[in-house]
Structure formats: structure tokens, C-alpha cells
Length: 88
Length: 113
Length: 207
Image (cartoon, rainbow over all chains, first blue to last red; front, side):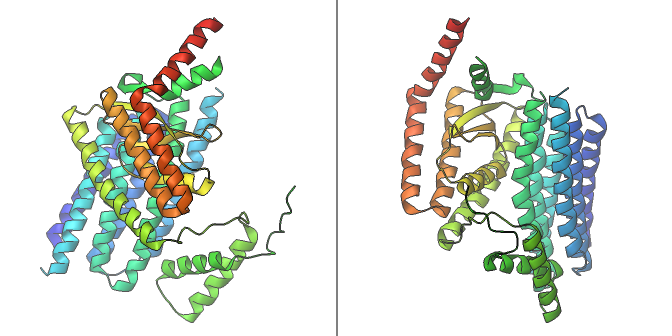
């Protein structure tokens, strides 16, 4: 089973690196926001895998809260960007 | 490995694969709208699979919390993609060469007359 | 102006139950203490953030809801694989379209849930909702030719019809089915496109 966790964490790590590449490259602000949002989802996924590894559900509240905060944060930044770029 | 382990392993690995596919598409695709597709959708699917894989390995009463996290993801992902897609369209983050038809711009032009 | 109930004068019991349930799920413990605190938190939330008094019950037909949920899950996997295959086949580029699709319902919450369901599957999402005109503008990937565009519109219409069938009343569902067929036929016979050509003519005349 440990090899399964190694593979899963490896894949999630690769996904995280690719996402960071998009954060660095941009080119627009929206692309970066999108990439950060994806990174939050990857972190949530990683935490879930960590829980599966230890077989203890200690981070469940953390997962829910991080997912919701990521959503709220992304929404507010998107609205901000939309307004700023529209009236430029 | 028990049957439970096998199920959990399959769910976890396939979920992680969907996450990688989404990230790969996000790097590879040409414009914000298509990247949005690649980013939010396979990502949601991947997270749901991973949560399911985790739920299989934990004690049953934790599954409720994981289901809650999955439910929130399913509810929020479309809202996010709609808001972001609209912002991308309005701020001109669309690569017109990828579009076969754009009936929204036709309508906007007709409305402006 | 309609009479507005003061905030906190009416707390819907169903909403209260939902919020307490979410609280219990969040903590993962089902004992008296979390029940009491959950009820307190839910009451505070409902008093501070009152919702519009008109509410609806989407669980009137649990069986239909489950059917549609299964349909959505199957569609989720199917379109994820289709989307992926399309990207790979085109070497990382994408071919997309923005199409207009008529809205099949007049009720806000039905439109919103249908839009969310359509946007959940990979490869398409509702970009813009023209509420007074009753039109969605949907962004669809994996379309290359005219027939592909028509098929994408059909898919969105079918999905919408399924959602209306699950959450709305029977007469509304059959009305939606009628509207969907009508929209498909108009699209096939090119009535919509000639409509756009009219717009084009007008543009030229105006100039």
C-alpha cells in the first residue's frame, strides 16, 4: 500500500509543479488566479491522501474549510480583476 | 492487500491521474477559456475520486465529512468557471482562432447597432 | 411594494436542520454538545443573513433526482475522457465554439441548477446568461464543424431537460420538452441562422 501512496503523492507533486509553471508564465492575471485555485484543490487532495495514509480523519474540518476559503478568495479576486480591466 | 486496499488504491491513483491531466492541459492549452476547462473540470473529478479513495480507508463516520467536502467542490466548481469565463471573455482573454462559431459576439454586435 | 418580513422574525425550520446537519458533518461527532452549538450557530447565521422568503423544495422527487445525479456522474466521466482525447488528438490545441441555447424554464432556481449541472461536465460551460432574452451562451470544446455545433446544442438541451424533469413540476417538464424539440428543429432547418442573417442585413442598412 505504501507504494500506492508514493505514486499518488508523486502524481500530485507533478501536477503541482505544472500548475506553478502556469503561475510563473501567466500571461494574464486571470491565468494566475486560475492556477492558484487549482493549487488549492491539489493541496486539499494531498491532505486527503495524507489522511488515508495515516488512517485517521483528523483533517476533515481543515479540508472543508480550505476548499471553501479557496472558493471565496478566488471569486473575490476574479470580480476585482474583471472590474479593473473593464474600465481601463 | 485486502479488497478494500485495492479499491482505495485504484480510486486514489486514478484521481491523482486526473489531477495531472488537468494540470498538463492547463500548461499546454492556448487560451484562458480552454485552460479553464482543463483546470476546473478534471481537477474536480480528481478530487472526488481521491476523497472517495480516502473515505474507503477511514472509519465510516469520517466519510460524512469527506462527502461534505466533495459536495462543496461540486457546487462551487461550476460557479467559479462561470464567473471566470465571463471575466475572461470580457477582458479579451479569448483566442479567436480557436473558435469555430462565436454567437455571443454576433449578438453583441447586433445589439450595439 | 411587497411586505418584507423583518430579519429574524421567521426562521425556516428546514434551513435550520440543514445547517445543523452541515455543522455535525463538519465535526464528525454526533453528540449533544455539538448539536446544541450547531443549533446556536445555525440560528445566529439565519438571523444575521436572512434568505429570500420564497423557497422551494428540490427533493419533491428523490427518485428522479437520483436518476439525474447518476446521469450527471456518467456524463462527467464520459466528457472528461472525450475532452482529453480531443486535446491529445489535436496536439494540445483546442477547437471550440460559443453557441446560444434557449433556456427551457422560467423559474430562477431551475435555471441556476441547470446551468450548474451543464457547467460541471468538462468541455462545456455556461459563459453568459441572458435572463430577459431567455438565452444561454455556452462555451463548448471539441467542435470542429457545423454538425458538431448542432450536436453540442442538442446535448446542452437534453441535459437541461433532464434537470427540469427532476426538479420542476410535471407540466413544466413537458413544456420544457416541447421547447427543446422546437429549438432543435429550428436549429436544424436553419431558422436561427437566417435570423442572424437578418441582423446582418439590418447592420448594412443602418450604415
